[in-house]
Length: 639
Image 1 (tube, rainbow, N blue to C red):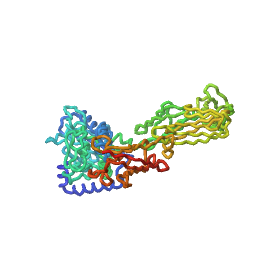
Image 2 (cartoon, rainbow, N blue to C red; image 1 turned 60 degrees about the vertical axis):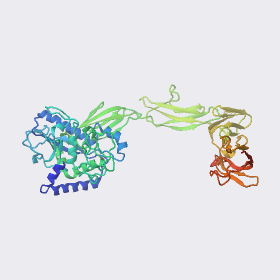
Image 3 (cartoon, helix red, strand yellow; image 1 turned 30 degrees about the vertical axis):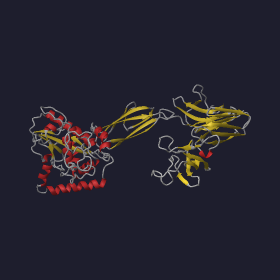
Image 4 (tube, rainbow, N blue to C red; image 1 turned 135 degrees about the vertical axis):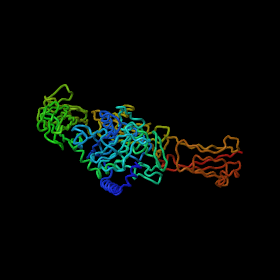
């Protein structure tokens, strides 16, 4: 490509026309940026011209079709190996996305140029009827010039084609994916990516290394700068030769076909913009040269109505969007229709098939369901203290008659059910047409009973001493108090229950009086060190002597607490009241060093009896005892 482009730029007027095409592409790119989706396929007709290859026509057609198929998958991002990109991208290129181009290609079949012996319906494939890399008779086509190149060159293309009879040139050993007619497509360039690469050039894409060196660029924002091409198959490799990991899987690199499987989003945006701005002759030509292009834009708007509870009233409506009339309509299971409208349908799965005058097909599966019966809960009467006088009624909103049942066995003509106890009920409904539905509701056991719950949190790390106090009002004794579904039960004539020794967590409490009136609720207990008391024997242990004589035994005074403490402060005083040690860290031990020289190793208190004073609060920061505590005593230093 570089050599071809250098040659072309030296031709009269080519540089100016090339710049105009690039400017037009940038105008389109600035106007719409990267596409979110392809609502307008950019169809480009293709012609393949085999020159002095000796390949027979049938094989040449198979090669051309396989190349177009491979290229369509590569451009649309539907290639079979796109999973390689999906697997490797997050780790190697986390900020780069692949693109799905709006450009698609067809091997032309209609309205061929005269003089090449091609009839309507023949593929645009010629043998030995063209020479070189340009033929004005084939303007409006993307031409593949297939001939032996030699010299290690796989193919080449202009950088930004014109559509006026030009195209890309590919050696037959690297064209398409089919080996036939004495020609073998040669690995590792046997997957059609050589032509994909060259068509990328034709659509204005440069190599990622641009002119070469880390100061050069291809002008695409999301292709990292690289100083030269990559070769072989660097699968899984993070290769940096400038500042960022090289995007070696892009079709615009030189790697083996098996390691090329994506265009970047920026590359796709530029190609799409180039085609829109500069290849309108091709795009317009596709409507008359590509048989499948006649079907572009043909679609159907399909609406449907599910079968109601009454039955046999489902409907499907098919309305053409584009295409050429007249249209033929068929709904599998319901027959044909002159208007695309079917009514009186049952629930089921239907296949809609529509064909326009160009024999363009449309097919869609429509699933109609039977809607549930339209019923709703009318009212509920809860029972009072287990008197069994609850009731409920379900109202029928359907035009057809419904039956009602609570157990699915006994059915009645009305939705009224009486003499019910508290509980959850599911009312089932049905009609003769097979429609069904249900309404669920809960009846309560109501009463004048009210309950007050009070919890006291756990104030120990190792002892469960939480409490829940329960007071019942308006209850008829005896009253039963139940904890956690029966873990603890208190029964008595009193209206108060007490549960002790409880752990941190959520506890359920139930209260039931003699009339069957019931109450249930949950109480959550947490840690609360503000409640440290006699039932939580927290204590500080302070040794009464230690011997800092470096024999490895009993070398320091260490205060040990049985519960967490905050606001800790320890002071050691000699017999004259002077502070010889002070610490606010409960984990810091005193090794007998004099205050102010700890760690210096040159000043220690003599053997004697010393007083200590400790102030602290039980608990942890934000959840500690309300009152500060003070502990005093003496400790003997033995030397």
